[in-house]
Image 1 (tube, rainbow, N blue to C red):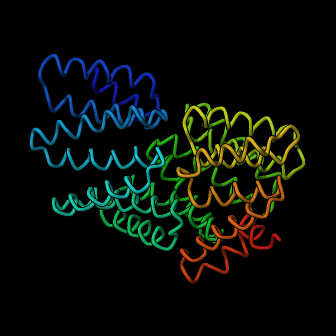
Image 2: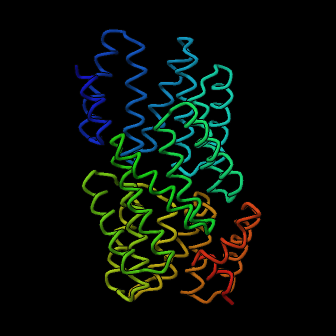
Image 3: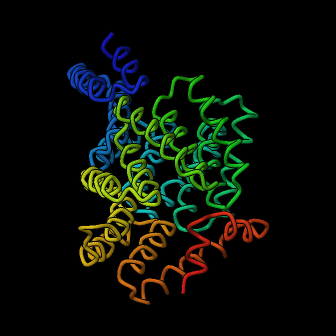
Length: 365
């Protein structure tokens, strides 16, 4: 009964309550010597810790799950644990390690003819390629994830793929594609009751509106997304929506509100170790009254290795605006070129023309 209740709490995003119950189930499984239940409990705890931003703890639980499954000859369980270890490595900014884990997971999924796992890991690999600036490869893998999920009737896979394609399409300057994927993502999140995803989709709508130039509406949408994410306890979502709203408020001329939002984002991102948010929010905060460019440069140096290519580019561009040090602009332009070179050929003009940030970096001198 505790296991069923714990699963219900996790599925409804009540992660703190779910975590406490799963820990009870884990202790009981160990007392009874039920190794299958122990492995399942470790796996569930890892997922909960991922959602709570406790990535080191998640990694420990997933590694214990993997070792247990390997010792018991449970190849399917071991494969799942390897994929989960890749997710934890990804959130810790260990992208090469994540790619290795995902490729091993994909190999095992194909050996076992587990097509749902194959679909899911395609999306995970796509996420790694995206943060490394390999946008064409990321799009191919996300589209494969979407198509295979639809073929299998795997609604959760279709949901995640639609969300990823919404964000990626926006990066590529394809706003109409981004909006179509975002609307599908939102619909599926509501259909399956995935409230964290719903909050992400709401935030995406604000970002798409910002890219279209309607800052007032973008601010309203991002405020709604932020309130929703706070309500469901989605701390990672809050940590990424806060700086987006702060950026919009700064562009609207509301410097004090922007500074407050950036400061809150930095506090939360520091706890969750979200490298992109720390680097970008620090750099953009330096542009506002009371900002500290030297501290922002130090933050980028500390977190650079864990930042995505788009995140590093945005941070460098903001630092150039704050300091007028040409080295920052040179690096921002180099990173932009990495993104352009890694993008699908048919999107390269659009990503420079339709993305306000890409256009600004390209035109800066």
